[in-house]
Length: 150
Length: 116
Image (cartoon, rainbow over all chains, first blue to last red; front, top):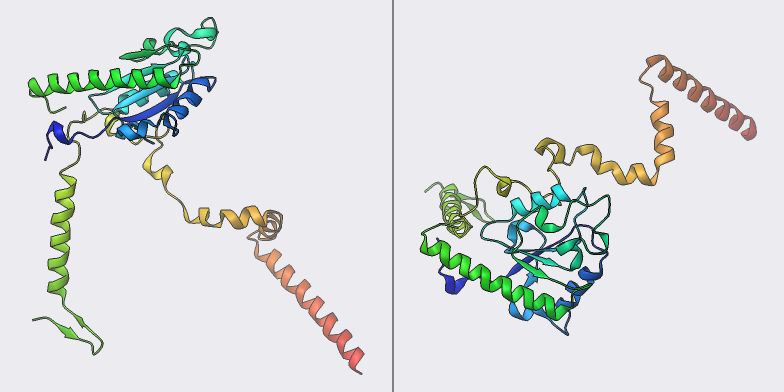
């Protein structure tokens, strides 16, 4: 039984740290605290990519984390969005010349939304999530029109 | 029919069977709400193991020996000593038996001497 789009649940997010300095991770947590409180929109962090609609990736992707990130992406059900938070995930940031990088993130998996900043502010992360939400709804609509089960 | 009166209650296998069938139907109905759109034969079917390759199902089981982990950690040195004593050789066990018997006899004889 498939409920209609009216009954779609809110955006559930799985956060992956691929070698971040934790600056962006702290800002993600800040977006969940009472000051910004994204949970009021139903956006929440989940403990498994299998429950997630969005992968929130921080960090420049170290060589050891590259296969892990790929596997997590593969385990996330479709349709899904990938949001990269922070300069490191977008370009490698201050680590861009490091011997140990396989990233940035779009070298490993396709990315839908980029949130720049070092570290990105919670307002920017929320804005990025809103963009991802719109893109996800458009993708779901397109898939429904095509008659896809996804 | 098939009802067993025990004096403090009753037991009817048909009632249990009907209850089990009803529960199964409810469980199956809830299961139909699950996402069907996942891609079969891909990683989407596999267990999430913090992004690592999940070990074989056999390797994930909690073994009976794991239940004694706390004891092994808490009394580790004592446990090691006991394990060293349990060599599995019958002659060693006989030796322990003779030694223990000797100690008990000594204690008894000394105790007797004290009483007298």
